[in-house]
Amino acid sequence: MEICIRDEAGYELAIEGMAFSHAQECSFAEFPARCTEKYAKRADILASKDLGHNKFLESIIVWFDMRMPLYFWKQFDTYRVGVTKQSKSTMHTLMKRELTKDDFCYNVSDRRLSYWNNLIAINDFDTIIKDLSSGYLQTRRVCMSYKSIRAIIKQRMNHKLPEWDYFCSYMRNNLEYPELLGSDIW
Image 1 (tube, rainbow, N blue to C red):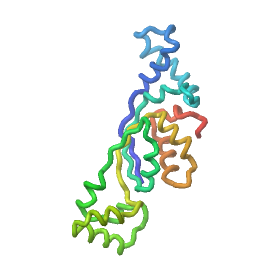
Image 2: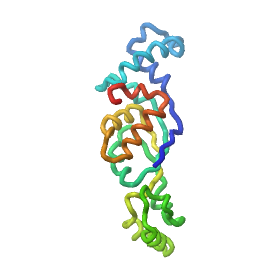
Image 3: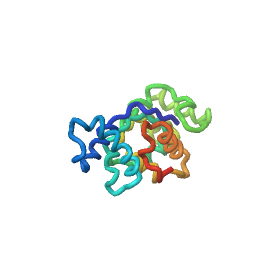
């Protein structure tokens, strides 16, 4: 399992947009300097409040790569709103090389690995795709907002699948503004 944040964007613009409801205090020219700093403190307070109070989190975007087992991706695919994913397609990449033990999240037996590699050698895609273990690791590029990440953490923290704890912990420790996920979820 691996996660790697590739980029984050939108913090300043999200904070400025959140300040629009109080904009009588700042002109457009003042937003970048005076208002971003002032409203960043307000953002920390609103981050934990759902029901639209933290909608500015939708404007802070994160791109990251994740290498997780297929059984994890089945659950991750529950999150569709505000989330885009691009994957290393199993259909297009599975037959291009022999599989190794590093392609799985568990210690696959040599016998099983040999069986799958024989299917690759004889170009039997239909059989291997139907028989491939759900522990096969697939890499996806994910793009989502802080608000989507917050929702996932609220729903999946302390989940019985350890991959979810890994995801939640990684986000908490590696995002630029983890405090904006809200103090109520830690």
